[in-house]
Image 1 (tube, helix red, strand yellow):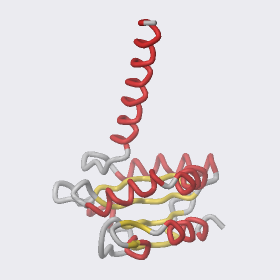
Image 2 (cartoon, helix red, strand yellow; image 1 turned 45 degrees about the vertical axis):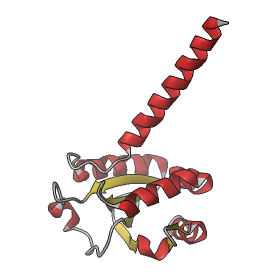
Image 3 (cartoon, one colour; image 1 turned 45 degrees about the horizontal axis):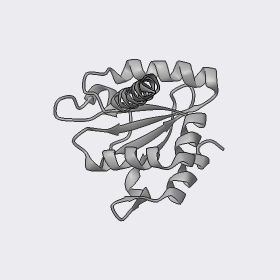
Image 4 (cartoon, helix red, strand yellow; image 1 turned 180 degrees about the vertical axis):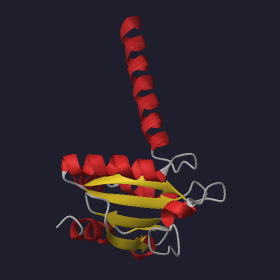
Length: 152
């Protein structure tokens, strides 16, 4: 009985740690090199025949966290994104505004901001996430329409 309880606790703890590691990897990291991340995303997108979404924001941004939580909580959208897009988080903060990298893209008026790229890294669309806002969150139908439009 004790072995079973210990095994269950170890399994739960391992799952929790794994989930935390995944969440930590999804943060906006000022130390990351977005050019290298994009190059890796292009390789992956070509192999998997996916589009790329650059998610530009920062850990300081409440709406960036709301978008992350929204996508994680909407299982259908989360699954669809994983099947059709490679997502790259690009940090924008006082610590590292990634000016050189972002200078190759249209001006951003607010955060978070999404850029949709083809599998070769060519810009297809610049998207304000304000268009998806609903109250203090996001509209699933509006976000779903956006995702489907760029995978058609």
